[in-house]
Length: 197
Image (cartoon, rainbow, N blue to C red):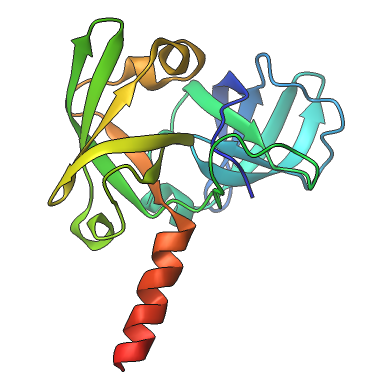
């Protein structure tokens, strides 16, 4: 479980092909690696992956073809948002995040509004029903609050702190992003559906 508060921007330095999928070699950047052990979970652009090897500030995770087929940003070298899994005594500054991506969205606009950016994203139709005005959404691992929702499209206001401390400043129209909807919305929908059956 994660909070969606990005701890550091790391970098996928290279990928090693495996019999199935890839092994990602990651430079942790400013991520505090103290106490990180083999088997621990780290979210990469919102995708929960297991540490399989460590060497100082570098670590490795394996990515399956299934994960690659339903996410973006893990199939090539480049910057990546990183967050270690929550511990029971950690402060939850964002919201409860599972690290299981629900779908890939597309950036429609990324417009400056003073020092901020107005980000508009089109979500896949099957998950759009879980996105609510002033609700929580995870974009590339970052816990954010929606401004408005119109069908499958929603907007978010990105403040300078978020832009400076995540990879979101690299977005542009046409960019693909990993989306995870709020856990509570998913469970509510399931309960309501069960009541109708």
